[in-house]
Length: 247
Ligand code: UDP
Image (cartoon, rainbow, N blue to C red; front, side, top):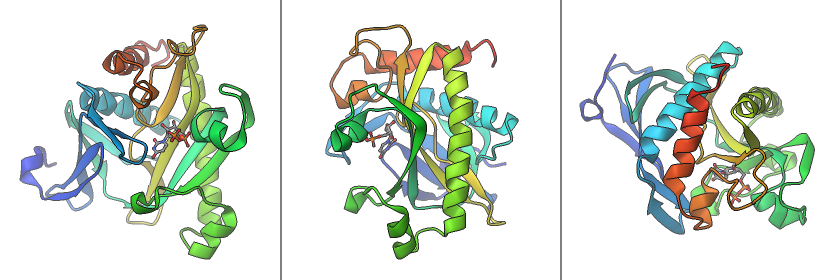
């Protein structure tokens, strides 16, 4: 299997990752960057060591999903900042799952930060930077023909299964999984599999038993809200993930 990114053509550069071709058409190489953006790229910065940390956390969680029967695009880690992944066509929906209210849910509904969302909420956003990733309804997804009803049902069911696995896993790490965003892709056979990443860039993660709302945050909200010690938050998530007794 191909290794170094220099060997393959750059296919796409996103806000946090670069995608390269490899000499195997079924496999692509993702390079995780330290670059960070927020508020639809209006805020830009860099988080030292983030690429390596997010690559390691994502790999660990993808492997966990595979053990639970949830298919992912993960292949292997050729280096600390690189992940080999199965080539997929990304479904242009960002699937957000929420266990506690935070972020845009609080802004748009008036729910208090941290209030319980039970049963968990599954939301679909249109993956389109120019449009600011708008929140969709099922009827809009149908109207826009972004995905079939069957695909939406599959995404919802996979997202909820992933939530069950992640919630339990993070709980064992002493971390509450507040909410997170997933992306899915279709492989050559048309099967929908989990893609992208699962990391403090894409999840809200709170330390359990920490009453101070500023100190409990370990994720990208440290960057979004200029809370400081962003690297330390990401590193703490990695340490807790790697030290999970069930891992
Ligand atoms: N999220 C993400 N990418 C996005 C938007 C959201 O990874 O483009 C994640 C975010 O980190 C959080 C969850 O999805 O864990 C829900 O985000 P929300 O809708 O509350 O938006 P935000 O407050 O981040 O603007």
